[in-house]
Image 1 (cartoon, rainbow, N blue to C red):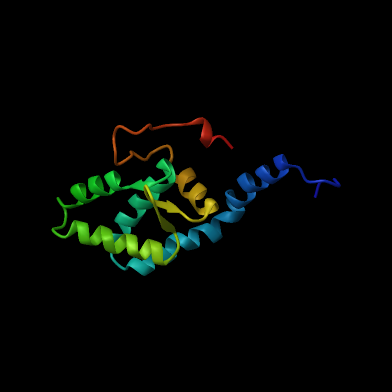
Image 2 (image 1 turned 180 degrees about the horizontal axis):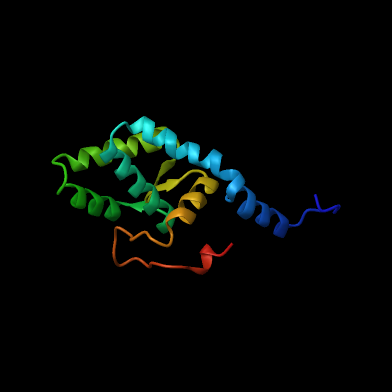
Length: 141
């Protein structure tokens, strides 16, 4: 588009950031969230899924300790919180949002992880308080 013969790594990074994660890519990525809401069919489980995905995106992994904290917090709202977290994780794994990892669960698709991270990075509070919050050098485009 700019009458150049070569594409540089900087060009690729720019297209990734401005096109795939930018306004043009929003419809494709928003489809994942809509599909998730439809697939879970329950507002509480949808909320759990959003927390699991935000934690996975921001912290890099939804750890066992984060899971314990999420179950503890939600057990004040519903009596079967551990089962609901387990069921929600099963849906997220089955639908290929995240995959099991030795440390917990992680996003499969970098693009989807980066989209979730961009949406929540400035207003998400990690489930495990002693983990670092805020902008890290690894977040830089």
